[in-house]
Length: 419
Image (cartoon, rainbow, N blue to C red; front, side):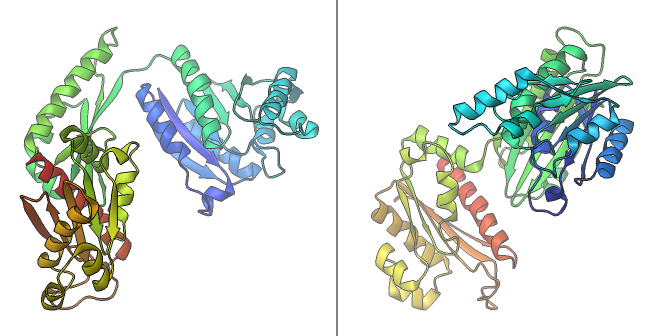
């Protein structure tokens, strides 16, 4: 079974908002055994919507549209679909009552004309009730294909996909099992990884594919399996077992690079390790300005092991808050192994933690020298008995340097905790 996703709205085309709906829907459809063959976006005009729907129908069996179902004049998806499917709008009392109840629930006066307009829906559509908003979903069928129209508001779309669309698709269509397994790696490029696992990749059976999904400082390795034979009651279990075996085989080839699985983040993995070891952790940051602390505190419950951070940007703050010797700063500079070593030791004392991370560097775009070019970053991890110091040279882009430093620093902490 195949699908094409069509997002409708000028705001997407001009870059005013980012289309996160398609990414979320793709994941859910794929988990349900439905392959997404294409994605496209069109503007808020009748011609664009019709052309988009007609093109999508040439590529897939299921066409899912999002956007353009609101009560304002620029929301024309519903009226365009009425023309496209040669039907007419009819009033749905049950939809009106549901929307009215929604307004009462959130304590707002019922805008009668708006609610009535949202209750006028195509007579040829199966109406998908939206209990978290005012725009109903619509399900059309024509020529053996399914056309689904959903609101563009993410939480409304997700509600309708979860409670209406996916169950209906599962009941109506049989699908061949598809499954994924993902390993998360850090601090090695995809080309280097590919060289190390070349024999493994070449040995994969035709129904299992390996994808490299790189981001700054990290590469996700995703194994995707498509059931190759006749669909049987145990097909899902057999495919899952095969992928689990291949994932273990892959992990054994690059154990030094893999930090987690599926959607795990580095900060989550580090947090789990700190909690398991009963350690308190803190950071002393200069060029990252608290970015690593921000990553750590994205994890719910991080206060269990992360009491705080010191952002010491100037020489004065490095000395005053972390006890870095003036002689060290004058002799070696703030961007040096000697400085981050003292910053790490000082952070343990200042923050009262078991393990500390210190970072100092030149994020750019200016400030570099011949000896210390833009992108030079020093970092250190200390537990009072051991101190590990590392130097990295990234690029000239300030934002990327800060993000890369976050990845390399957290991975350094992870390796330190592993001993």
